[in-house]
Length: 137
Ligand SMILES: [Zn+2]
Image (tube, rainbow, N blue to C red; front, top):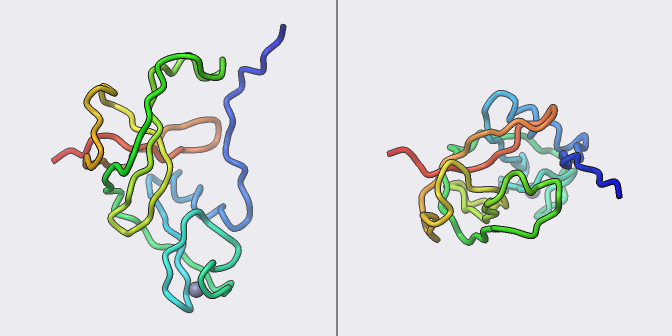
């Protein structure tokens, strides 16, 4: 049996290219609406609040708190077995955005809801994935 062990990379669209370019420079960017001021995540072609196409970017602080998380210890897709155990989480950015991510650089047993975390970028192929680690005080 032959398994495809290639890990997936983001499916980049013209409207998300700015986000991924930001990650290459170590910046976590949030899409913003130039007409109604909404902060938008994930990146879209039109503002989900007012349907404007007048969209831009702001740089997030990279600071967030864990809203919820789940740690996988076994039985994941074969291509991710080498990363076990790993934690998938929702984090709330200081800017009011909730995003799905991974929590890294800490023992999964130490992860708590409400824990302060900061963004860090992990390279996969040509992409830099925004993960989060415990905040350095
Ligand atoms: Zn808008």
